[in-house]
Image (cartoon, rainbow, N blue to C red):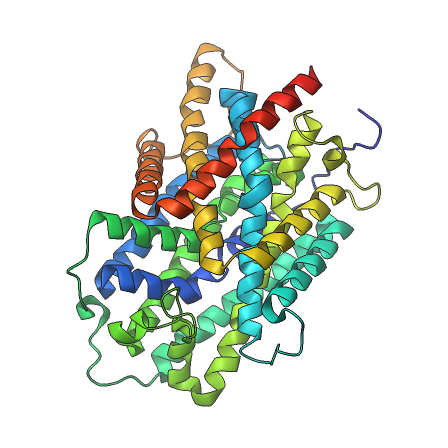
Length: 456
């Protein structure tokens, strides 16, 4: 082992792993993206369908990743799977994407969302740069917490995850139990506006919005090297986490349509109406009145910070794994002697995320992350077929007790097909943001050549 490097410790238990799954997934999307989806689809029933199908696809991906994680419980998640399945080029390009836009883009988006919601409670005008400055300060603070020890980041994650679940359930119960709606508002199944523009293309864009809200199920495998008994605990955490998230999302959306008309939801906060109140705030106001805005803003902030903390904790493990393999800057592979976490990787990630928070808008950041991420989600899922084939050829090559995805090969094929559709649909429907993500990935090719040459 080279000087300045150290192996990570398996100190994360099943509760911490499960909270990481739920806490990293639930961020700002459930409070904001329903408005964008309603604008695209024009029907409450179609919005519900988009949420369900996106949840099912994400769950299929989580099950596939559970099998891969039980075979390769190493730092880096997809990086480790792609390296074992297709070699170093594909794994490097994935890590390159995660390093520059995947992880820091998610962190920046969550920080920007938290700062926006904080502005709904207190005035930020006295702070130079207002919301963007606050976003950077949040990124730096939570990155510092995760530099202390993996226990600190995990404990913060458990606390924030439990709190955000409580707040979402309180919103749902409050809306259904005490929310006052207009008597003419129809039930969800009849909540229909203008659906004349509906197509498979608009459905795909709506699913991109929903998939951002579900994004994060792939983060747990990135810390596979720090989970105790990973063959058992990673699949359990992924399965339980996804089921909890899907249930919370469906209940929350049902509550929105219970008290708001399709027109009110379409006119809520989005890229089209950036100054409007979020759909969750409008729903909360039906039973909290004037206290609805600050009350739901607090829930927004806690949810966004929980997702941001999970992204910080997991995202830094990808460049750490790359550097340890000699494919990235050596300093990123250094582990603090006392903290037992990749401190330098966390610090560099925080600096990139801070720069993105100062440059981009929330919707731009989420589009970049989702499109570039799903290119590799589908590619990573396909490695399950490679490993199954190898296992048949070489008996006992892999642990025979590892988790196997149920419904094989249908479940991974369904997920891979959905990934291909979403990427192609994004390239045709929203080419600018999609091509930015593709450009960032391809920009890694000359650097891969340089890193490989230096390694040799």
